[in-house]
Image 1: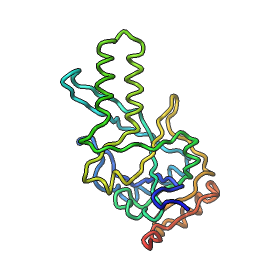
Image 2: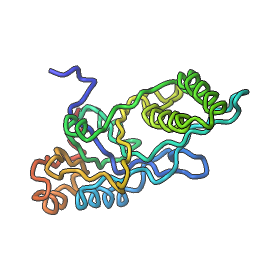
Image 3: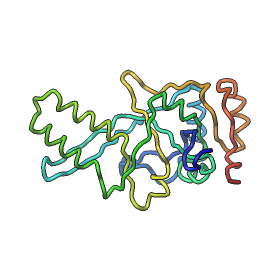
Image 4: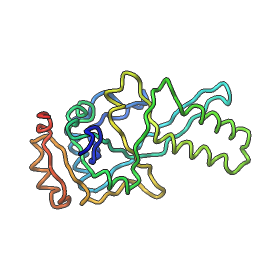
Length: 227
């Protein structure tokens, strides 16, 4: 029996907030239902998850060596949320999702991120030390590699505020970094285990994608409200 706080199924939601370029953060509410449904159909039809299209970065402003900006490589993500808690997370990420077995995604290089409170940034010492090394050894071939590896590490670190324990922190996000020559992450359609949707779309989704993803269970969102 599991602990009840982890899940063997990892979920990719299609109704999450859009990226707000002005603020450099996600919007605060899910995208429209019709857009989330369209995104779900597109993923099931293509058997692909898209990598982030917006550029994320982490900026540090030290007295020395000054401003340091780490550009995070593109990634795609899933969330390790027990099925009984999906309805709670739908308030932010919508009512449409695709579920994969954790073991399958582990084999596809998905890894869990680490969380830290934004005011207690444990990455800062590593960033300042590497940056100082780079600033004094620019001719060293390892300098550029050091920054690259630090950026990769930063992709698996996520900050949150004390007000986000019940939102950002509780997502249990996993990420996969885009590899060279990749455009999207191509998954095996036989590995789709769940398709979550409001009841009114279930029959259409099952009729359209049931044969393509024969292992999928088409789950009515309304049933989650009973848990």
